[in-house]
Structure formats: structure tokens, C-alpha cells
Length: 160
Image (cartoon, rainbow, N blue to C red; front, side):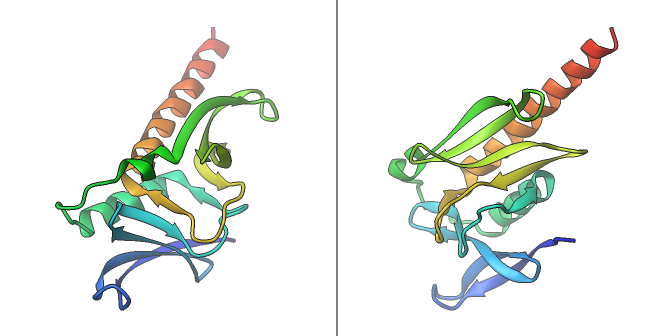
């Protein structure tokens, strides 16, 4: 069974500022930290094929955002412009609603329903992939609401 964990730490390479390390099966795979671009999620390994529970990840990002605060930092527009998300229907899964995540117009991940929960699944992505946390937090919330609403509509229609 795969296990996601997150721990608080201090970055010795950055004046021991607070960070949130993300581990997958006890291996550090990413970090949430403050940078010149704002609060970011940086991958140390390629996230290809990693599947992470959206609820857990959303809570992690909110916790990190609350714990790592620098009100002076402004997110630069060029960082945000790299990331987009598109609502799609998955033809391999009864055309269920999904949210595709793109970086520089390349599909890197998808948020979709898997059994009883939503998951974030990475298709590909280079080592060192950096993602703005505010954008991702909003995206996860939007995906959760959109996909759950669509599921509820399907259930309501099937009961009629």
C-alpha cells in the first residue's frame, strides 16, 4: 500500500526558512516552500504515474500556506501563465468529468474520481517541476466541487 506523508522542516539552503516536505513511501518527492514567485510546490522526482488523494493534498497545501507566510511576496505573472487547466470528459471512463492540468500547454496531470474519492494523477513532468500553491489549491477546490456536482447530477438522473 502506498502512503503519502508530509512533515514540517527547515531549509538549510535558505536561511532555515520553514518548508513542508512531501514524502511518498518514506521518500522525499516534493516540497512546499516560499520563493521569489510566492509559495510554490517543487518536485524533486518526476511525478509521472504518482496518484495522490485530492482531499489529503488540498489539506496539505492549506496547512503549508498557513504555516509558510510572507505577505510581501508577489506572484509573478509569468509563473502563473505557464499553468492552465481544462475540464474534459474521459472517454475511457464512461465520459466522466475530469480536470486536465497543463504546464506550457503540455498535459502533466489529471484530477478525476477513482472509486470513492478524487485523485490527482501525474502523467509526466520533469524533475524540479514548480507549481504555484495558490493556483493549485484553487484548482483542487474547483475540481472537487465540479466533479462531485457532476456525479450527483448523474445519480439524480439515474434515479428518475
